[in-house]
Image 1 (cartoon, rainbow, N blue to C red):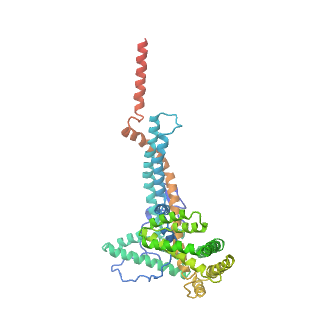
Image 2: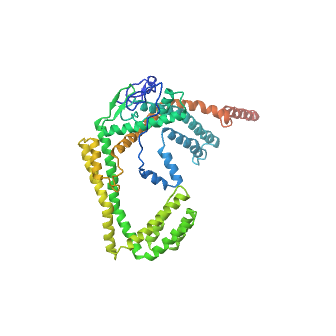
Image 3: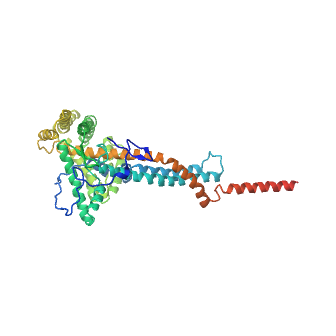
Length: 491
């Protein structure tokens, strides 16, 4: 059951809990820290790490992103409640005052607008102080409870506790150990957790820990859904790739290959010259500028040649060397394609070229994708039939047959289930923190308003006395004195 946290006797979620009774602790059992020992043993070996490096498509895409896009993506990926509060405060404190101060539609005098504009930065500072001051402790508390086993399976992190949580508890257990030794123990513990989680998935028995020292098994329904979602995602990617291959890739290749066939000499000369020029230059950026000039020179040429120039210009790299490597790979690929399509003896016309490309794509790409889809659909059926994970992996191994060219050769079912489980729980906790932060912010809103109303006049009195409300009684008194003086003169 999901258990709640109360603030000032107001429930944020679920039932009552005593926060003061929850203490970080290290327990024995699966997903827990070991009990304190007088003579810790540091000789345990880490699980063997495979030398096979799997390509992470997300990382590959990042390599071709411009620096500004990378920065924006990093901010987006790490955006949380605290960052949202700070960004909103920046907007309130820096942007809003400009529109208040220089509002052409306002009928108030300039001093009044200035006075009102200064309220926004003060409000922004107080918002950060009050909301962040409460949000950060709550986020830390939620993280600690998730690592400690307070939550149910949706938020429970006892099988893959955070590095900081493990490190803190180890330092408490072994206060006299060096930081280097503690770091080694943390790495060992995290590796053991990953190995334990993988073993549990292979045995179809994912056991999580509770904060009272007991364990509970992940529900069968949630576990099978997790497995099915892994296959469903892979199936979607395969179907999307199949659609792209038939509807986009083949027509695009046909168009480009036809240009190579009908403009072989021109294409060879242009791209051989570009390849030689790239090898002689140290500046990839300068090379790209040369391509832009070349594109202008051939502006009246075949549209496919201009499209090839654009493809080359689309190459990206983290630095000059990476960019040069990407450009070199693209040019080599173009020259390889020219030779591949024009040296084929069966290609004598556009029609025979189309048949050649279609047959090649079907054999090399479409058939392997269809084979992958067929296997994944069979695995889905096995999951629905509650087939043990070991049997599913055996079936997968039989179909792949140690073929390194098979599309599923690097697909490790249990490992993918483990990754998705960790990702889901982390995302659930992120959403939980954001929702809790919103509720906390609403609860402290009256306090923030009172604090603003109390602080702002005093701030203006101290920093901008000429704009402060303190001046108004003096001005009124001065006007009254002037009026009385005029009446006396008239009399």
